[in-house]
Amino acid sequence: MLKSARPFPFAAAAASLTGLLFCLWVFLTGGRALCLTDGCTLFQDFRLAGISLWQAGIVLFSALLALALLRLSRAAYLLAALALAADAVLLCIMLFTAPCVNCLIAGSLIAVTFLAFRAACLPVRRERSRLAALWLVLLVVDLGGVVRDLAEPWTPLPAQEISSVEVYFSPSCPACRTLLSRADEIDSSAWYPVPEDTRDIWIIAGMIERLEKGMPLAQAAAEARQSVPEGEAFESDASFRLGLLRPGMLLLQLRLWRNHAHVLAAGSDRLPFVEFRGLPAFLAEPEPLPSREEEHAQAADSSVLTDIPGLGVAGFCDGESETPCEDPPALPSSGALIDTSGMVQ
Image (tube, rainbow, N blue to C red; front, side, top):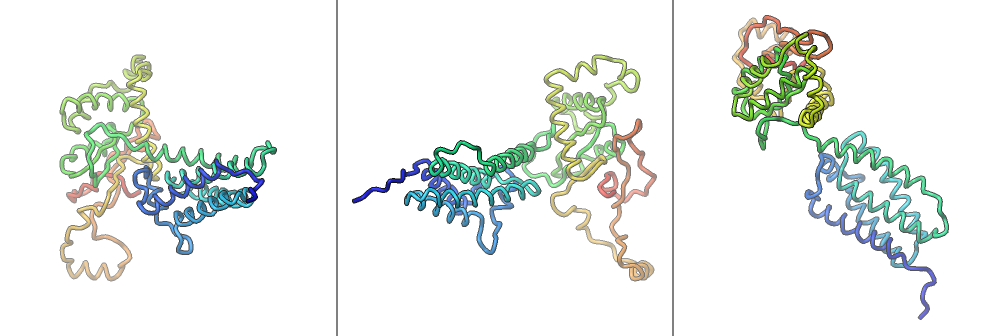
């Protein structure tokens, strides 16, 4: 029996088999063990013409493995090149949506398979692959997105498994202090400090020390604010500037940057910033029956939402001026917590 003169591409066959097994595992189990970002959930059920990405991956790696067993390295190289180009397009899509860790692993296996087949059918060629270089650049950018998504906002309070309300506040913001005074009334809430200036960093540091002693959040923030001098007394004290270089303060600033970045990424430039996970309770409360005059006014202009109280801004901070905090206007109390936040601009 005659043997083929073409060498068997062991590395390419091993990479193809690994890719096939990985795509099968993700398709059958969902790949939740490696699902570190929201992109995994987004692309897990994504289908093109009724075919999921993982079904396509199973077919692709099966074909590559079959070509490797038949020692058709050049045909497999061309197929792997097309697959790597398609994966580069997927990496571009993830730049504008969310990175998928499972997709990045599958794409890496495609790249390894491509390079292995390329080495098998073009052993003398030493030029770098432009396609592989472009894919690698996109991969690095997407990996940066994964790291960013894993950097969750930080809170000095004990973590809660389920938080229906997330509040980002500055200890020097009057509207934030109003919201802090009612922190006990907000069930299942998480609180994330965001500094507006250098003084806020020291206030937050003092607030953390008091929280560790068991002090309530509002009281800890108030006492910490009183313990840090204001104005020229703060600016002239070099210990506050140099103290920011201590390792603990550098770590605190990194955590606070993450919180600030979350607020900016959400499209807000005001504090407090409140996020709801689900339907706010005050919106689900039954409305009182309107009078005849109110019914007539609503019929005249049904496009204007006037029945839900408190959907306006009642004070905020944006950190853009020497006195960044706007005092809340004198508004009638509606009893709704939303009145103390700047969620609607």
